[in-house]
Length: 200
Image (tube, rainbow, N blue to C red):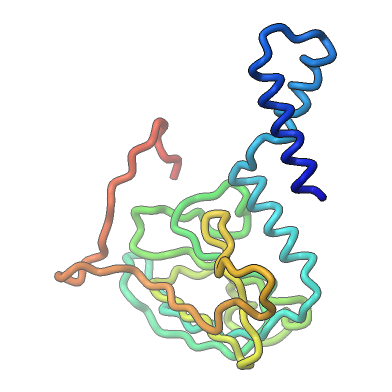
């Protein structure tokens, strides 16, 4: 029903856009249709997906996060292997996002990622390194589910993965995030061109 209604609205929008002379009522209708059919921007899409996560009625799966902690120069300090816990959300970032207030401000020129792992309320009192220090500088992260029947989705730049609709338990059982190295074992980089300077 919603798709049919949206299709009619688009048809009407095209009709009004191509019309030469609009009366006052048609002008108001055109402005309303443009507002309602405006494509979602990144922030709107991200908020919708976050709200969807919040509405999900399944139990958060227990995950183990293994990560390589690094010092401020990017050299590995130690490999940490945590116990299984449920998390409200896990964020990994190397570029600053204004809506992420919990995470240490990332810098794309640093040879590490900023990780923030917030445990689920029922696990927040457990003795755990990520409860004590939820923010970490990491060069490699591995996330694994405890139960073979569980899985988890991943949100990348506002896009939800895996992109499978209508299938229950269609997420990931494990993922590994690590930096790409060239043949000399140096971190690979690529240039970025923007209209305005990147604020770090």
